[in-house]
Amino acid sequence: MVNGSGESKKEVLSRGDIRIGALGSGSDFTPFLQHLGVSAMNVGYGGEDEGGEYHSIYDSFDHYTRFKDPDFAYGVTLAKTMGRTVLRLANADVLPFEFQNFSNTLQNYGTEVKALLENIRSKTEDNNRLVKEGHFAAAADPNEPIMVKTYDEVPYINFAPLENSLNRLNKSANTYASAVKNSNKLAPAKLEALNQLLYTIERTLTLPEGLPNRPWYKHQIYAPGFFTGYGVKTIPSVRESIEQRKWKEAEKGIEIVSSVLNKYCDQIDKAVALLGE
Image (cartoon, rainbow, N blue to C red; front, side, top):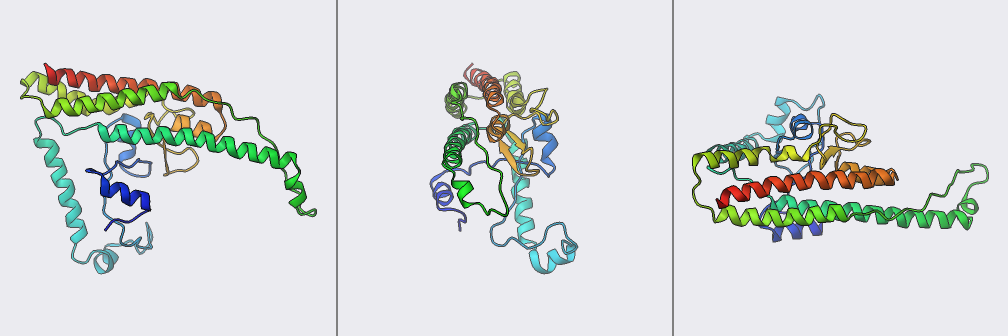
């Protein structure tokens, strides 16, 4: 059974894979992915029941075995899932990495930040018009006055560098998928070089200086929100700058993210070259 919104159900039923979800914080993967740039997964099963407790005195072994999973069916299934995943990685000649899912998901993130900017532009225009026409003042309780203000006009931001890098990523991902599918057995030295490219590629999405005001978080695609704690923010330097109306910082973030994506594409293209040699 598929749970969720109509759009999410439609997507799940129409895809041949599962779209990757964005990782925020609050779990063991945080230092690996967001500080070191090591690829990570957070896998679990759920959807039937939210449970009702989390890190409480009721979150005990006794509670788990009496109410949660008395037959350990879910625990065993999850252990088998991750066990087979580890074996798949360990026994593969060429590490089973692919980039089309990531590329497609990043396209969505790019669409989201552009839509976010337009949404703020629309709300700003509405707010300023209502203030200017006196609607807030007319509706306010005279005994409890409210502070209202107008905002500066929202500028248009150049998303072209991000769009170009996302377009390049799409092409590189498709080229790699075709190359790895049609490749012949590689010599040991080339195979070692290819796998090293694959398992280190995530590091190209990090920067030594980290995110603005958060140097520990080095990943430029995934990070916990500055104000949300565990909750993830994708393309955070761009998204959060727009949310905070820091337009120059948003444009700088676009340049930075585009740069790391191009380095990511460079690695994919090197992998393609190894497969074709």
